[in-house]
Image (cartoon, rainbow, N blue to C red; front, side, top):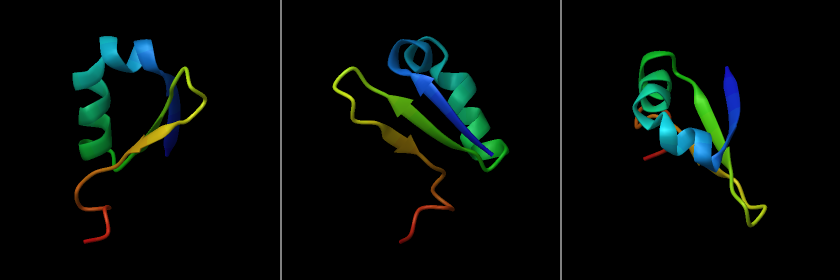
Length: 48
């Protein structure tokens, strides 16, 4: 599953979203005000 959040929401609920990334194998995209998003993925999903 994938979620897209705005930057202020991700900041306010960071622990919750980091748990989702790790526990539910979810990728979180955070939309930033400069129109460039970032992705948060678990270490297991990140290509080493």
